[in-house]
Structure formats: C-alpha cells, structure tokens
Length: 200
Image (cartoon, rainbow, N blue to C red; front, side, top):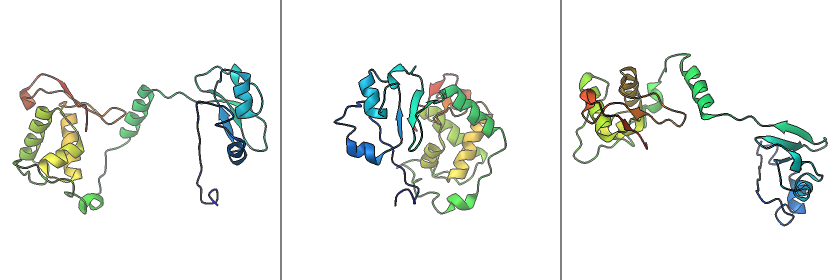
C-alpha cells in the first residue's frame, strides 16, 4: 500500500464545490485542511460543518484528522529576509569542505568550452582567476555553473573562484534563490559600473 511505502497525496483546489470535491474524493482523502472560504456552504463542502468562513486568513486554517475533532491551527509566514538570515547563519557555522571524489567523475561532462573560447587550466591560479573575473564582469553573470561552462573546469574549482570573488568584494553573497549581483563593471577589477545577474 502507498501509506506503507511512505507515499502521501496532497490535493488542493480553489473551488470547493460538490462537483470538484466529490464523495469519492472525500472518502479516500479523510484528512482535510480549509483556509478561509466565502460562505458556510463552502465550509460544509470541505469540512462537513461551518466555521471556515470565519477564519482570519494569513495562514489561519481548520484541520480535520481522521477520528479526531476539527482543530484550528495557524501556518507560519516565512519571509524572504528570514530565509536569507537562516541561510547566512548556517553558512557562518563553518567553511565549505568539498569532496573532489563526488564531482570527479562528472567534472567536465557539462563543461565543454564554447567554440573559440580559451581553455583554462584546471585550478584556481591567478591566470584562471583573472579569466574568471573578466568573464563575470563582461557577462554580468556570477555562478559556479556558468564559470564551469566558460572555463571548462570542474565544479570545485569554479566554486572556489566564486568564493574568492565574493571575499574580494567583486560580487555579492547569494540571495535566497542563489543569485548574486556583480559589483564590478565590464572592465573587470578596474570597473565601477554595477551590473546584475539575472539568470544562471
């Protein structure tokens, strides 16, 4: 059975009418959650009794579990700023410890250089770093995968280059969706015009 394998099904709808929430669905999905609805009829359709129409919104909900009474619970609101603070705290707990053997087999499979692009030696030497800085400044994109493709290097080397640029203030730390702003202009280390990384 699915529950024995740990498989769970969550079904959601914004139209709690009897032709959507049929008897078959309600019989097979006994656990239910209702956010605020517009009428008692909608509440009865979902929960079997009124009450959901009086909820406050913003995560306020009714929860029905098989064999138990309806409970009123509240879901937390987690803002982007809170997510960024948690990520920053976790990152501050220690330096990354990359295991080369994890990416050794696949390093370079997706890193074929573009036609006419100079090949960079694997590593994070000054020459490679300068190439990486010029690429990031020129294209306005600061991501590990982008440097992998452009320089034909492995993930670990590209990650170290990105970390060095961050430490030297050339790019910002990653936001909650992993994007970074490029703080240097197209001239590289001598540039001053900021650009933004809009895609990976």
